[in-house]
Image 1 (cartoon, rainbow, N blue to C red):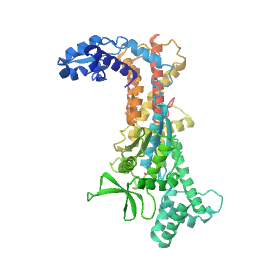
Image 2 (image 1 turned 60 degrees about the vertical axis):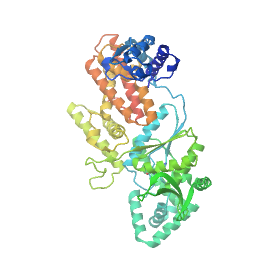
Image 3 (image 1 turned 90 degrees about the vertical axis):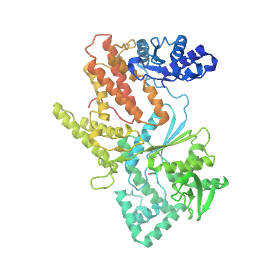
Image 4 (image 1 turned 90 degrees about the horizontal axis):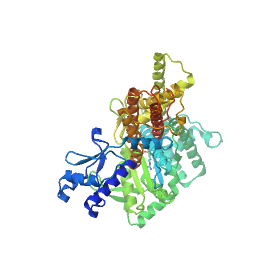
Length: 585
Ligand code: ARG
């Protein structure tokens, strides 16, 4: 709900009390956006729901409310329609005033939150020495967008990369490292393993084929856990290698993260188990320490345990998450913790959330949310793979998007007989390629699977990043053509609304606030995507219908202001999606 709706709601509430007495304090006036713009902008449906209680016809109730309703500073005189809807239409002067008010507001009418708090977004979180796959790409893009929106609202956001940097696989990797790079551990030279994924695969092959190797690997795990210096050194080398590769992706995507991997919580793991034991929640099952869960059963219908400590003394993914949760609440003072992972991990989150709640570790004012997302599918509707059936490397995927964007651009330049510098072509291709990938992801309801299609995401038409970037570039084209600096339109420049397309655009521009607070609540970035796509569409319709540079003053300045407001809203909104704009493309 935006500020206008809130005001109208309040006035309706007051009118209800004035009409029917104090008993009706707090009754929801059921204010909604009008189903058909012909009837206005909003409608209040409360009269229909009170009919029984008041023993009156809804239309009579509606008139009684309208009689006491004073919205003359916002709306045209209210009208009663159908069985008893109260229709409200915003006054032109009100809309104009609202637009004039955000003309110089860098926040475009979006207030900062009244309740700033520490919010943690746990996202991206790939695993050391393993491939960062499309699932991590989704987590990175969605998590970054959520973090940007919360930051914009004025929250203190911790962007945590919960990297998988601990576990028994390191025994195998370190043993193999010692075998193939014996010098790496003794010299100060930086290690360059090259392709870590191949390294991982080879290590695994060695491990599977040789029992002595397996034994050494097991000992390395013990040494790692005990903190043996040379083993820790090898572990660090492996982490650094991966980190470098992850960083290439983060740089390409322009995403910032603070790495706080699983290993960070090692020293807190024993206390997690001890405290669960003290709370009487732990049962031993074949040597493993378990917490039995409600609502989770195995195939035989028996209650499912969450293992918090294995029989060999080792800890699990869930134990680390429990430790991380406590740390984030106690040390970071987080009030909301948001975990962005694929929907396949939903059970993991539901399970350790349940254990943490049972142990009473989550204060009432702390909210923990799993933000799940669906799969990325190939155009054949199956899991996204390369032609040869391998998993797609993210770098290749992003490079491919960029090079396809480049081909599209070059074709367009040829057709339009335009000459551009290599620098321009490179920049546009990179921005368009990366934006296309990001937006294809963010424009979907994150909970559903989506089909990855370069052709679709790079299309200049449709709900795509290029379409919106193009709308933005159009606004900048107007300023270039007219030699106008939008910032210098003057303080007395005013928006004046005349044409239908101007009204439609103006009303949409005023809804950013509402959309942002919706996303802040339900963490669905596609709502912002839809908003920006519609904004681009409404702007294009306005621009097709209305002369801008060739119109007479004061309409010319007013329309230039609509262009500027559109440009700034697109720029801000796309920035919140992690997408950069282009002055020309
Ligand atoms: N490393 C995990 C994976 O690749 C994701 C971690 C998500 N965050 C968490 N706190 N469990 O699947």
